[in-house]
Amino acid sequence: MNKLDITIHKDLGIPTLKLTGRIDTLTEPSFRETLFKTIDQHNTSIVLDFSSISYMSSIGFRTLIMAQKNLSPEGGQLILSGVSTYVKEVFDISGFTHLFCFTESNSDALQYIQQLNK
Image (cartoon, rainbow, N blue to C red; front, side):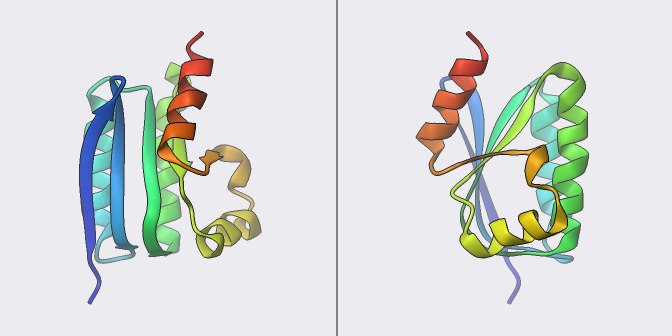
């Protein structure tokens, strides 16, 4: 069964979306809606916790690229934390790695954002 659970919390005022499950054709609409609502709330940097994502299809990559394009003019960025080796390889193969910041953990992501804001 294809399922995606999304929980949102803020650390140091920065939203983190904890993603659990799969991002595919069936689950992408709820992922897109949640992500873009978060962007629309005037958040410039957003952490996406991928540590519990087992699979992401091309439509998930499309959503991430659209979101990054929306954040870029404002100087914002998506930070992807805990991306599995499998999902990271797909980023590498597709040539999208350079568009995003990848960190090992959410705490690393928050430290990265704090450095940007100095």
